[in-house]
Length: 274
Image (cartoon, rainbow, N blue to C red; front, side, top):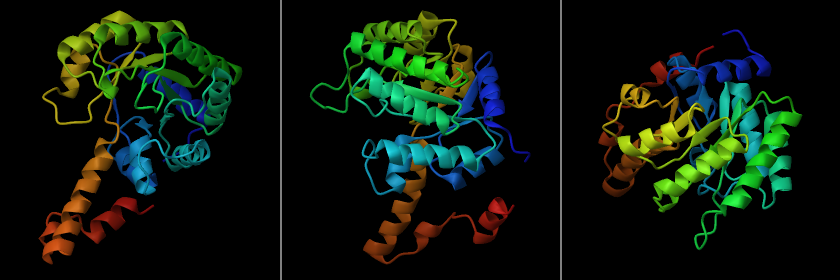
C-alpha cells in the first residue's frame, strides 16, 4: 500500500463526512489496525478502553503522554485516517485543553474527540458553559495548526447514566456552535433518539456508537441519517472474551477446548506478512 501523507489522510477523512455513512472501527494496536485496514474499512478510530486494557490499566488511567505516544504509533501503523479518542482533553482548564489538542494534532491524527465528562463519579458531567469554552479552545488550537483535523464534540449524558435527551441535544448544538465538526452522543440506542439527534444538529454529521449487540444494522443507521458508526471498545472486548474463555478453561478445569475455532498460526502469519 502506497504511504499517504498526513494531509492526504485528513483530506480523505473530511470527504468521508460529507455524504453517506461509514463504519469507523476501533483497533487498539498495530496488529488490529492492520487487520481492519485489510478488511476494507476506510478509516479507523482509537479506543481509550481497548488500549488501556492492553496496558493492564482500566479505562481513563493512562496519562496524556502515554495517550499521545499511542496516537502517534497508530497513525504510523496504518495508511488510513485515524480518529483519536482523546477523552476529555487531559486538562482541567480550556488553556490546558488547547495545549493537549495541539499535541494531539502533531501526532498526525485526522480527527479527535473531546468529551464533557469529568472523571468524578459524584459530578460526572461538566457544566454547559465550561464545556463550551473547552470546545472553543480545542477549535482554536486546531485552527492554529491549519484546521485540517476534524473536531468531534461528545455529550456523555447517556454514557454516564444520565439519559436526558433534551440536555444531550442542547449540548450537542452548543458544541456545534463552538466549532465541533461532528457530533457524538455515545449511549443513545433507539431509532427515535438517533433520529432526534441527527435532526437537531443537521447538517453537521453525527457519530453513533454501537458497542453492544443491536438489532440495528449499518443500513438502518444510514437510513436514519447517521454519517459514521464507531464501536468503541467492543472489538477489544470481543478479543478479551475469547482469551478469557480459553484461559479460564485451562486454569480452572485443565481443558484445552477453549482453543476450538482459534485461527491457525499459519493463517495469522499470512495475514501479517508484508
